[in-house]
Length: 376
Image 1 (tube, rainbow, N blue to C red):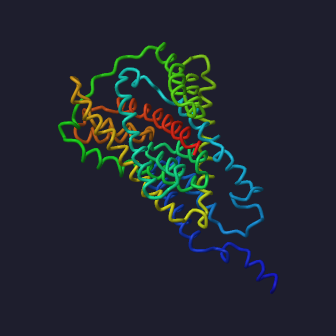
Image 2 (image 1 turned 135 degrees about the vertical axis):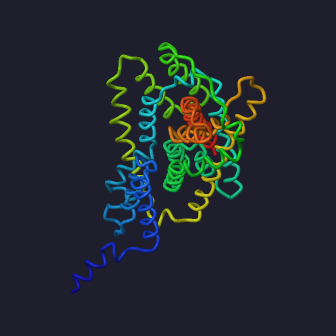
Image 3 (image 1 turned 45 degrees about the vertical axis):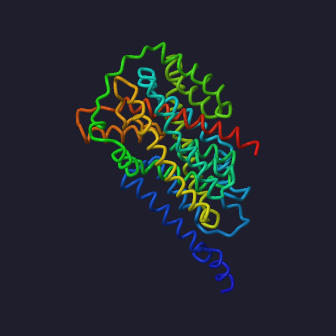
């Protein structure tokens, strides 16, 4: 009987507390949204299942938890804490990205830059709420709506906040269909929403090959700390466009990015152990994340309206909402909102131009924040 009671006292049923139960419920919701509702399943399914695994109760010191230095999960988590997985994801994103629409209408790049205002407004808000500067910078990057970038910067500045920041960033990316359309409709009139964009010019092969080489030099000279992200991003795009490395480009945009996404999502989910994750700071991060994403969306839309004051050929202000770097979710949502007003209005390619510039913009912002905060 003594051995039986000792065994029972070591089971998860005996060791569980309310915080782990809460997180298991959260993980279940993530898995449900990813599978039943198909909200960003490639993100929510690995993260949700990781939350379930990470919150199975266990006794400490046996090398099971993600925060125990000799555990398997800890070794897998190494790719998160060092920024390895985000860099690999950016390599795959670059190999998947077509910059034709951006090169055909470079002025749309400004909307990708304008949407990054959410990052800097949230930085001030986080500082006002009492977060340390490095923590505030890590929270602010959620406004870029880019999960890998958020994880990368947080790993460098505030690794103890990787769990809540990653969960917040990916949650809001998955909730784009819920968050962005009301903001777009609130800030625009129907007359603005039905503006048709002109057909994009055809971009030459030479332009598409030269762009990643020029882009990496311009962006990384401006923010050298963004090299781990933008270096791999533009390299992946060059593999795609150069025409002589199709096998490498295919591998980067399929097997490599899929593998990194699996481990990134699963280990980030597993890092949300209830006793570590459920704190007052986590609640504040979720609140500030929502503010950051909303401000980023609104900033892009408002800046497009300001641009229209000076442009002869007006821009549909909805495109500003695609300036966040949630590829391709925000571009798709802009297109759907435009078509709900006028089924003949095709905004997807123009929105992708803003979307791809948003990816670059958020990575540059992350590099700038890292270079400023690292000295504090």
